[in-house]
Image (cartoon, rainbow, N blue to C red; front, top):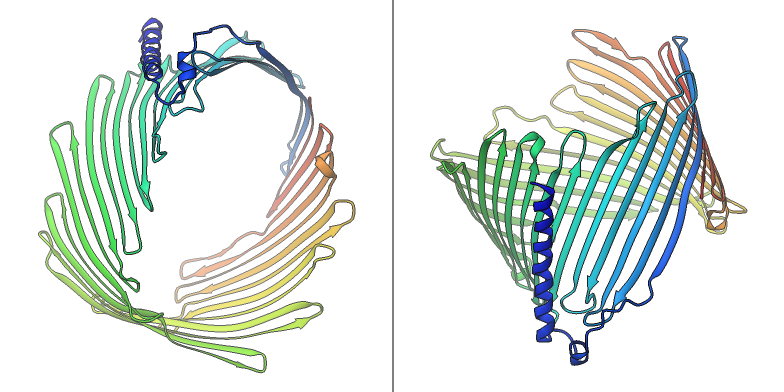
Length: 601
């Protein structure tokens, strides 16, 4: 598509929407008689100009050293300037229309020190215009045009054009007098010109309609046509989508319906391809006895057509119900009829379940003892044209108990608890019996908060042991955590965290072990409005690789030590940062240092 043809398309689209606005205005839709009866006056009011300049200057030093004896370092200087000018005005008659235009530029350069002395220079020029017609009326209109051009120079090469971007956005909105219906019509155009893809264009027409008749009911309609063209790759894409959604909520009925129509046309290297899809989804929930009983139904109809030859149809119809006998016991059932790729099938299921059908809580001498037991009964079956009828029944039980106590200690609160839980299930469709797991956990927490000094301390020790009765599988995890946050005078704060974790796994064929330690400390000093600030952060991690034993090998993993430090200093617009990173893995080491100084204006 030539630039002349694209410009003609822009003008035609703009004329159509502007003509629509003019017709609405002449009919007096949404405006008082004093507005459209007044004589036209196209004289511009005084134009407001706003000129601003920002930028930065930076310096950086980077050092890298490894255990092999190789060390490298480099320095760089950076400079960036961003001038920007804005012009604002408006039209009062015959329509109120704010106008805003922006013109900006950006210059940045990075110079690397060393024998090569390489550098990178970027120059960006961008401009835009925004026009709004009747923004506070029932028919607001907005148009925006933006264009960006980028030049880049690397080393001794000449300044070359890198990327040219052009965007055009048109939007026409509307709103009903009662405020229950509103929507918008949009046109978006984007053009990218890069050294790889020449004049790649994207266009999109979209329509949105929102209707709120009242209560919990809503109706949404969305439709769009999108087109993409990449002449350099001989690629064309046309996507047409229509989506309609309806939702109703009330005390006894909740429903939602959606319709999705999609047609995708694609042409690459002269080979066209078309895919059409249609899908209708409906969900209905009925609550005849409130939340205690719900009857639900769903339906999905879909079709897929490829290149007007292959058609795939899919249909799913489902009906289900759920009834709550008590706060802990529920019964449910469902039936589903489906047709996929011409293969029909029917499936049904029913279940009776309760997580805590039998529960009891006992309190004695500050201790709280809880015990519970649950069960589940289910039956399911199904058949289709390609497979024989299949049915299965399953029975499951679960049980557990917990002992906990809380007491005051050293100005804080100490909480301790021990718990055990297990569950198992038996199914007629399973050939082998499942192992019965037993999980034992113990947790001790202590925490103290000081409101006057805004300080907090927390300690936690936990042990978790999981094993199976039917096998030799065991997993054990030990964990310890300590957190401290201390608020100091003059906007200062100090916080630290230490965590230790050890894991042991064992099965009939293998065993493994690993440990992990992590410690962090952070100091912060901030003044009001961030005029001045200092942050010191340090992190130390140590991983014990442990070992993995099995019937084939015995692998010993190496230990890893990682130490990171960060220093950030802020004084007005000056920012200084120093980061160090050290890693030791076995006999190998790595050390890096990065210092940056940046001043914005």
